[in-house]
Image: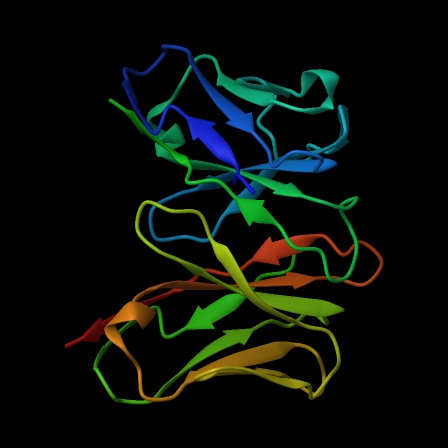
Length: 117
Length: 111
């Protein structure tokens, strides 16, 4: 079974530029998550989708970050404009069941490492 | 906002040694997960514990959930270089089962 795919793996941009990340979850997984992992910290949830609907985006900085999951499959996360503090690894994860269940297993992709100069 | 503190933050040990990593919070969790993350990869789930006092074993790894469900520990026996990585705990509060990740423990096992 193929895992969660993410691209690009690395991205370097200057502040105030825009950037987009793409995620292809494991086939059939209903729930998709985007996390931000700053160096030396644990992942922080940015947004959770259930099929193509948003379940939780309470920690998404909506003035600059946006995400969509069209057709309930692939997802993109965009930052516009980027700030220095957005430098981090952006992880995508998917889950075979609806999020919020006790023994849910999240399967993570390798992440996109973003450096904002 | 609940906070999951992990200790130690960094740990460097020799192959064959034993170690324990801790995950503590002031909040009560309905369940708690442990992940290992290797450089350049996403976290991989090791175990989920759901009952206070529960102990689970995965080969040389022993996971324990505190009786009050506010803390957890991960014990590794006879560490190997392949155990090197970032160990993350993630706790879910009752009702939501939304997992919040801890601060992480970076382990390096030297040959």
